[in-house]
Image (cartoon, one colour):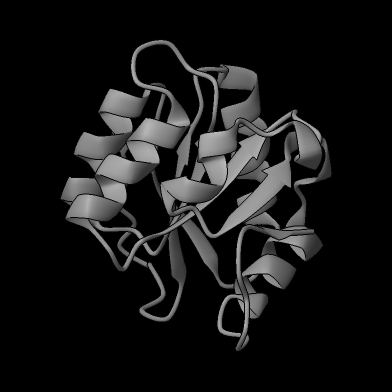
Length: 142
């Protein structure tokens, strides 16, 4: 688990925690965040347990959450995070096709699902901007 602090943080930035047991994906997600205007990485975790603790400490606006991890998976971690920080938004990230998502993914409280192969600045911005749309039900997708 790593909490980052940046003295030049923009007060209007969307603060983000990246959670994945795969270091290469965490690196890729961090690179996407660097290229996405208005988003700022504030921490990263490699397990669901670390994610729950880190989110409680840094209170990010957004969590990019892997689904399959050892220990508590991303779906259970999402439930726990939202129980303690209901204003945090969680986007689930995995390699599943949308119709192959575990059944409890939709009920986890996550607001969107992103296939890891599609994660990029345009997808991240698009999903974030669509969060406030009226009538949105279920998981948003790219």
